[in-house]
Length: 496
Length: 122
Image (cartoon, rainbow over all chains, first blue to last red; front, side, top):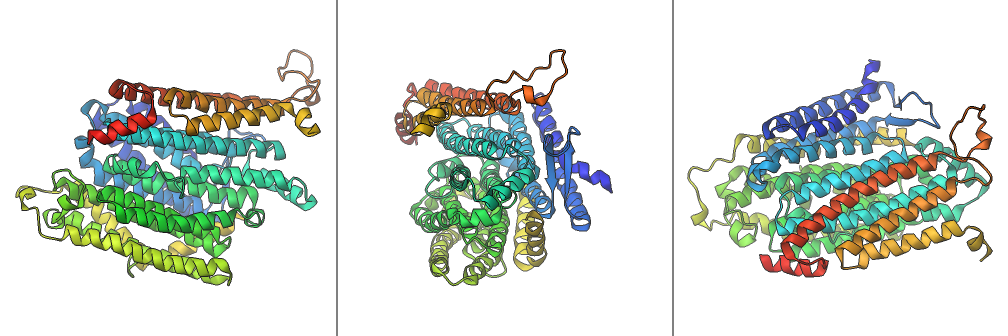
């Protein structure tokens, strides 16, 4: 069984090398290679999950240099669940959006799309598994470049400008992250997460360097918050999600920003230590910005006439939910936040893919007036959009309900100012979500625009397969969330 | 104030970081933005290099005699700086290529102007 310990490293290296190989392959071969890779990542992460559930966490030495010098990979239950889920969402997003790659991307560039996907996959897995902060920084940058490529590959003016704005904001974020890591290295002299935590504990016992530590926590947190589009750093988000191709938007919203948040949780638990982190008051900043994001994201979404941009602004609100969960500064809050990472990723990627399917039968337009009646013209996409909308609003049976339930119970755990605000804002935000999502569902089921009807239209097998899997996953998260919640709890316990 | 002058490397690199950061954030010219990004990253490398130096010690290269770690400065920041330089070079390349494509299309480097032109394109 011990060979399973090699799986995380193999996946990362295979993803990197297949990215290199894909650049010289034809579009078909590159696509096949990427699908094989994502499937492999899916199965190996499942293997790692079973292994960690049975034998506990393990660290994997790279290059046979022991702990304080060498580089390490660490896998626990939470990492394995994350990797499994990321591979699954990646697979379904590619499957659902596969048909539109040909429409949206010029012919000679299509194999390059899969190069970017491979690089993104490797950086996502590395961010999930790494135990070394500087490695994390390097893969954050690889992630940024690959994500920027995914936006700009659709080479029209809008997407190039969106990619530029995305890159600028991301570079600001990674600059802050890097100087935070540098200061941290000066303080502790270590880069491996477990060593850093040991020396920070010694520092905390002697009461030394509390001010620099607060600065470090602030820099790293703000850096990651910029990169994951927490309100008010979300200016790049709407264009980046709105003008890229369907798979890109799905992957960017559900995987890229979530990987950064997972890195933040990792830093919270395994580098700084929860006690110091929660006492540093940065959680209050998360809470306030998260709450503000929940409201303002929804207000912006209500004002939009473009469906893609509306879904993008809804992401701002959902990222706000996650940061609000982190902002409670309790284990229950983090559990709810991690669950919301899963439920939002599963729902939002489905919404983006379904929205592309709806706009395909409406003359490739995205405005509500053109999308009227699209639910009848492309029934599969219509059903998927409805399921996604209900899940986002938080209707029982769907994934979004469970995460709202856990967020509320995390809020009610302590009776303080956060509880009052959180409960009120959750209620308001649910109403706002309902306002714009129900409006969208009603408009796609308003029988209009018959001139777009094409009798020979067929949504395509890959699209249907992806959508059906998405819907099943949503119901699974909504109806059988207990095993996942328990896995998250075990994983968080392994973290600390 | 005394600390500021005895740690002048760190003080200078933090000031440079601030200059680079604000240029990247606020300047409208794309090329100046990229220069700001490079200043910001270089400031961090200066900081790292300054922190890795230990007074009166040698470069960590073994030349014949039996080495003891006490003779050498800390080599790890140098490794981090090298890695960081590779990262920032590749990001700069991506940004420059994006700028070239935007310039070919809109004949300006001003990001606000480009935003206006893109909006009109619709």
